[in-house]
Amino acid sequence: MVGNQTMVTEFLLLGFPLGPRMQVLLFGLFSLFYAFTLLGNGAILALSCLDPRLHTPMYFFLSHLALVDIAYACNTVPQMLLNLLDPALPISFGGCMTQTFLFLTFANTECLLLVMMSYDRYVAICQPLRYSAIMSWRICIGLVVTSWILGVSLALVHLILLLPLPFCGSQKVDHFFCEILAVLKVACADTHINEVLVLAGAASVLVGPFSSIVVSYAHILGAILKIQSGEGRQKAFSTCSSHLCVVGLFYGTAIVMYIGPQHGDSKEQKKYLLLFHSLFNPMLNPLIYSLRNKEVKCALKRMLIKERTP
Image (cartoon, rainbow, N blue to C red; front, side, top):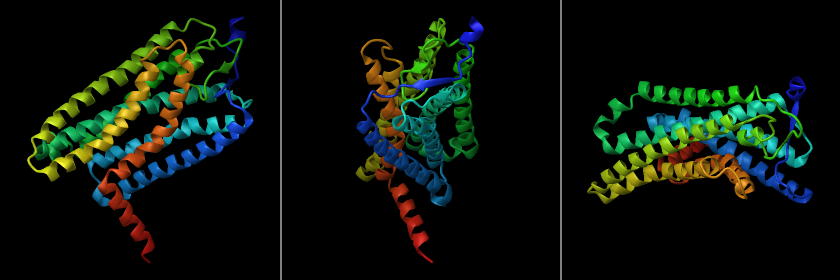
């Protein structure tokens, strides 16, 4: 009997309960957002790599954030678009497990990268004379590699605990992608340990890092207020405001989804919140950095001028 329960070959993603016309409309709209996500983050990634003036620790971290956002969107959005066109289209068991693992990997990695970026801003503003020594390329590469390794390792723990679970009866996942809590609900076994570890993992990569970011920016604010020059204060604020906007969007939605109540009427609302988290956040990040960052805009202008010049 147990052997029959575990022979699940595919899942059906329920997505959003919408009419056919609304599904077609959302398909076009989300496809446009997806294209903007790839274009915007691809531009940030290209500028950070090709423009020598952006070969600094700040843009090194930003390029990895753009890379994570591209991977983030590519992992969930294509399947969602397919399901909008054909709600009866299933996803294979292996594809579902892979999607869960990659989503957790990219989410964990982005959490940690945002912490590294706040540390970079802290050193740049609070200890400017020691910035080059503290934020050496060896340190920056080590921080980024550590973020990726921890992101993969934490996701792997959840995957190892998820794979042995038996699945039987309804194979309908009440989500637009294979989100781990939604997948756990269709397992015909006690998933209490899995759910506790999801909550513990979310707390470890959300509450702890977010607290460290708050502390960093408390010190940064104190340092900025001590700057005598109004122009200097404005420049310091502008270099931090973009990062603060991204931190607020990412951590705000993630904390509500995984630290807040997991039961009750908020379940459907959290599905829409996760849509914002996985589709709109990656699209907004490059817009926030490009619109509020003169160096990025200047680098884009230089690249466009270079392309037009024979």
